[in-house]
Image (tube, rainbow, N blue to C red):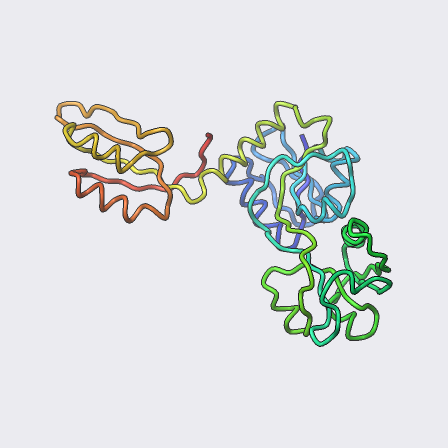
Length: 282
């Protein structure tokens, strides 16, 4: 099973880190390599440009792929299924125009020119609204094109909006919300190994923002502790040998840990241990 992942850029390291946390660590470095093994002998990583990954998966060079949703939409491949939102690499594709101009609505661009690195996404956006524009593909410095009279507006990626503001551009409309996703070719989407990879990555995402809490408490206070620690379907309770107490284990949200520990102490809990969770299979 081959998984195509970004070979460089802002998505490269987070993707390798996620694979590592999921138990699919890459065994050899990615520098100047096309393929690398993982600790699972049945899973190989293929390094490719993020923009090329949907096509690699669709054509069979890889079975699965990790790349941005924006790249998937731009590729227009039809035989690739989205399996999982991996929760990083979030950004927006926006329609923007000079802030001192008269373009305040997409309809204002009828008959105008729009520059972008995402010509297919842009064409689809305007076609869905019945607006006829000329789409000009550029490969960089998109935000400069309105100022050198190459375009009347742009469609570009933004995370914070800083680059747009620096270049005196104002957002006219949101075109697409994107994040990094796990994809698979539709003819292998039901393969058991694909399911294993999806479960492994999903278990890392499920563990994010969670903490495992363990404590001892007198049996007489168990009901009070259970009110504090509802957990995932209720806390796990075990007898403590030789003592009139029970051990309680539960998963809690990280943001609730401070208050939860205080409440547990107040109802008589002791030996409270809070630890991180690497993976959580729900």
